[in-house]
Structure formats: structure tokens, C-alpha cells
Length: 200
Image 1 (cartoon, one colour):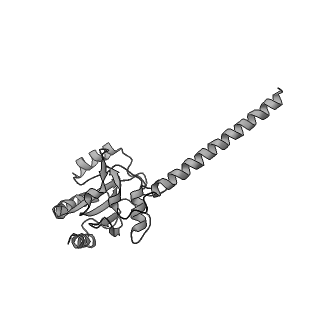
Image 2: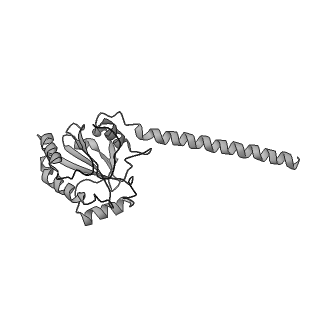
Image 3: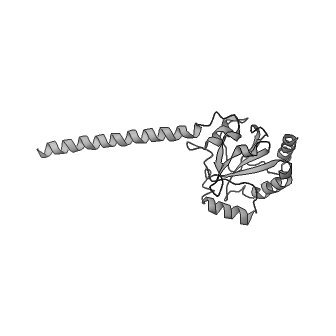
């Protein structure tokens, strides 16, 4: 076999390998972009199961009958002090059937870079957080978790979470009542009055 023929054969093999890689990447990428949307047709948050900071699965249907405030949290954000207000809100209303659920996310300027263990230590030592906290997820982009696909498409207004400490108020039936951006503090009258009304 001539050197020219060998080189030509090697070029063909290399081209086929590159094609295989492209096909594999495209197929994998298509699957991963569709997977987070698999639960977007859910009727309520009660259809989702999430992992706690300790890695244990938690069915959100466990909160059926409770008013829930879902918040995407971060440890290195200008809004991080809202942890204090969220904890106060939780303690104030928990006996009435209200719960705050914290979902750490690193989608905004890398402001939640730590592991679940890091986040747990930070929340407990810095802000004495006692409300349920969950494993870090993505709340925006191609890898958005199905829960946030549901929240951002079913809320009014619909649309992506804009920053850390966005808030979704969920009724006892697991459906979205209202959403609030980061600038709405946990103690804001517009939020507390909505919680009061949902608890009645």
C-alpha cells in the first residue's frame, strides 16, 4: 500500500471519527436541553421531588395544604441578607401552615459557588436558617431544573428568573399565586399581605 493511499485512508477514518463525535454531541445536547422541560406540563409543584441539602429526596406533595414561598438563594449576593428576613417570615407563619423553601443556584455571576455542604454550613452559622433548604440546581438556561420550568412558564408574568432571591408564592393547592423579584424584601407588605390572604 502506497504512502498516499495510507494517508488518504487515515483522512477518511479521521473524518468519520469527527462526524461520529459531532453526532454524539448533537444527540446528547438535544437530550439535555429537552430533559429539563419534561415536567413543564405539571399541574402544581406537588408533582416534583427535590433533593435536600443532605441529598435526601423530598416530595413537594409533602407540603400539600401549606402556603409555600419558593426562593432561589445565593451566599455571595447583595440580597443574601434576605436570609434573615426569610427566616423571620418562616418563624412568624410556620405555625399557621406556611413554609419557605430555599433553592441555591449559581446562575447569576457565580454567586453560589459552594457545595451543598458549604451552603448548609453558611446558612446555619451565618443566618441560623431553619427553613427547608435544597440541593443546588439551575434556575435558568438550557439546564434549568423542571421545577423552575414550571414556575417560570406558569407564573404571571411568565419569564426567566432575573436574579438571586426571586420569590414564588404558592397556594395550598400547589399552584402559583404570585411572583416577586429580588427587590421585594421578605418583610414587604405586598408579600406578607399575600401570605395572610393565602392562609385564610
